[in-house]
Image (tube, rainbow, N blue to C red; front, side, top):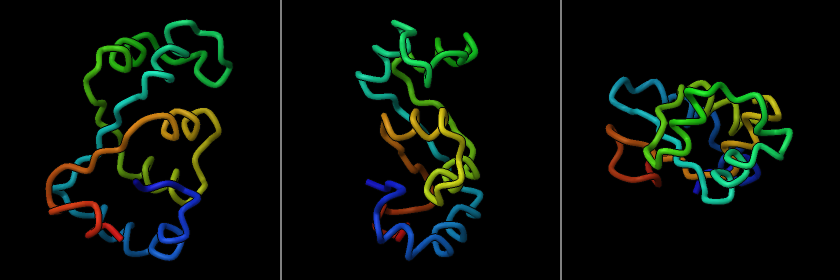
Length: 105
């Protein structure tokens, strides 16, 4: 799994950025059960203030299409604290254009 703290990610950020330019690639986020629970209870300041439409999508169990730039900024350590927390508590799926995640690195 790609995570900001992974040394392979830091070494390969330019390559990752280049791969994200592929128009066939889409990035989906699936929240963990822990994150869904936090969102539904609304008791964690890092998940408070999420627009209702996004809350509904996150709790629906379907993946949410996210911007490639958001993924890159998260991996580079440049994403804001709230969004970083959310992406760190779920699964990132890369769809289309790649055979598997190893091609990303």
